[in-house]
Length: 135
View 1: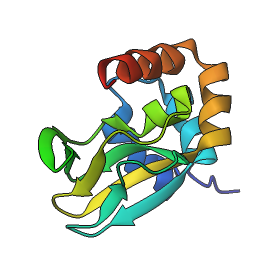
View 2: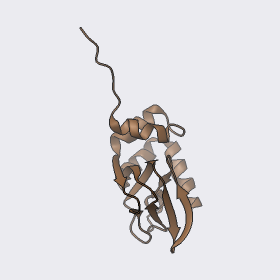
View 3: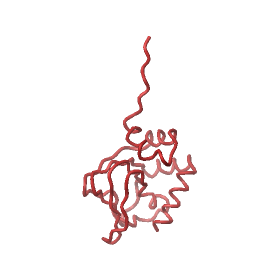
View 4: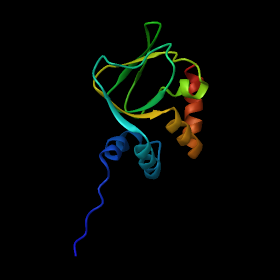
């Protein structure tokens, strides 16, 4: 008999390096099962200011600029969560996020994000802190 080695899914392998500083292996595996990997080209908009919030994103590679009223306010990198504020507060997006280079992100829709926040107090606390800071 031979043994088949366990191989992590492509999604887990992509997400793990970016999130391993904040989340356990089990949490990362759960997020990878629930979310969807998405890719944005350089210059593409991830989030548009004033729109309804339907997804949050954990950036796993690349970087993105955050702007409000066409004024740059931040740069996001691998491991950063973005889009959570609109999902937490129910308010429209308060900033635009644009890929500065190709970006890969784990996309979580409203229901997936809510479920993960219920499962892990760590994610709930992180998203509340970010939502308050980004008001």
